[in-house]
Image 1 (spheres, rainbow over the protein chains, first blue to last red):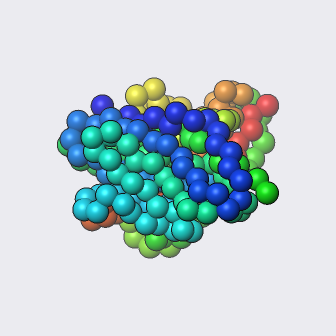
Image 2 (image 1 turned 180 degrees about the vertical axis):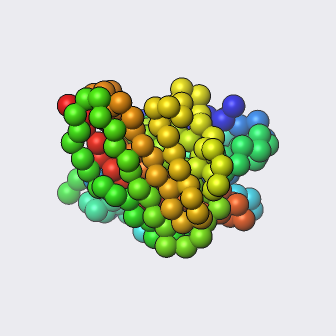
Image 3 (image 1 turned 90 degrees about the horizontal axis):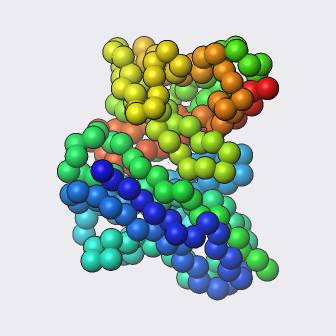
Length: 116
Length: 115
């Protein structure tokens, strides 16, 4: 079975500082990994994905994520946080081995708060 | 990415009634899904909506409670039947393409409150 863990319910950073939102995963085969962001009263917006290749992937709004196979992690990062980045962030995984179609499993979410 | 709309955006319903939520996509997509996001919780997949056949439900979800239709490649409905306060959630539809690498794109959600 596939699973995702986001160990932090909340992350607080000062504007202009780098941010990291943590995600670890568990799959039987190779993972497809995704990050989504949810602003208040809105649906989820796709940020970025890792499928294969370069371990550092870049996405929307200046976000990037680093895939680490040995640590089974896919942490979301941004070099300089903005107050407007404050939102709920979800990590998701798809296991390519189980053949469950496009079924995604989501983490519990991390609330990011960027303060002035 | 596809443009996805949902109706209604929110509703307040009485216990024991049913609500049908619509999801419309601006282009043909292969995969459509329905999720539930309970207050302060993550997303839980309810079912995969299959075009022209019965939906595929996840463990803990049954057709009698959450009947789903998908008459074509751009439209699906989810009905929440015989509602109770525990059904108060945000319901989200999402779409994906088999040819893609698994990412899904989400509608804005329907916020349901059951009194």
